[in-house]
Amino acid sequence: MSSPSDDATSVVPPVPQGPLNGGLLAGMTWPPAEQGRRQLRPGQAVRLSFFALVIVLLGAAAGFAASLQLPVQYAARAELVYLIGQEEPTGFLREDRNLTTQVILLRSRSVLEPVAATEGLTVKGLEDKFQVELVEGSEVIRLEVRDESREAGQAILTQIIDRYTTVSRDIAPAETRAYLQTQLEEVRRRLAEPNLEGSERGALTERETTLLAQVDSLNLAGAQVKVVVAPYSAPDPVSPQPLLAGAAGALIGLLVAGTVVLVQARRWTRG
Image (cartoon, rainbow, N blue to C red; front, side, top):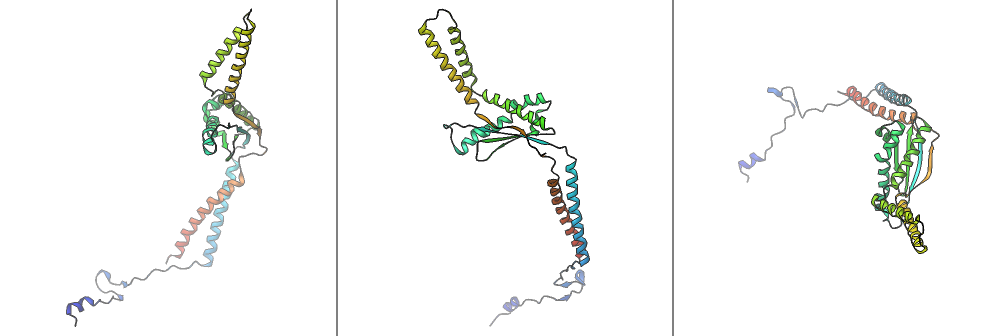
């Protein structure tokens, strides 16, 4: 037999339905009715599709027209190969410690500043023209200079390679080079002395040969880059590219059109 208190707790008051009378809730219904949305009429759907198409076409036309205002640029290209000795580590370490270093050296001020001064450019201006790409999985370095003149671009790239070769060769330890050069000059001075005994002359000559071999080895250690494709000018301009610019404009127009259509559709279907 249940107690009165149990019956009181087990009884759930009914949820009121229909209008609520009195107070601030007068005129409201429970539960509140969800507001529905109307469907787009066929004419409205056609209009939205037309608006979207116009926006996309305008974006494509704007991108195409803007690209035609840019100056025509041609690319001068070349390829270098960095010869890595067998004693160097392989794989990622070899690429990171040797090839990446050469890319940094190619873009350094010690290489670009003299070329920029010769061509009447700033270093920043030359950096914007110059591109260096390390071909993945190889020891090839691709170089490119973009300029409005085919001849000027090719000349700039040639100067960069020449300057880089000089700087790369001079990377060898300065103290070692200076020491070898001093020793070589001393040996040659003594060889030029008159009345030099034959045994002494033979020893000096052998010493001269050894020093020359060491100097050559030092020079080769700093000049491990070979030009495999000499600078040349690409036949077709690399900029502007109207079709690519038009496609980019169409993509932007598509994003804008999607936003406009969505907002307008919500306005028209709002209940």
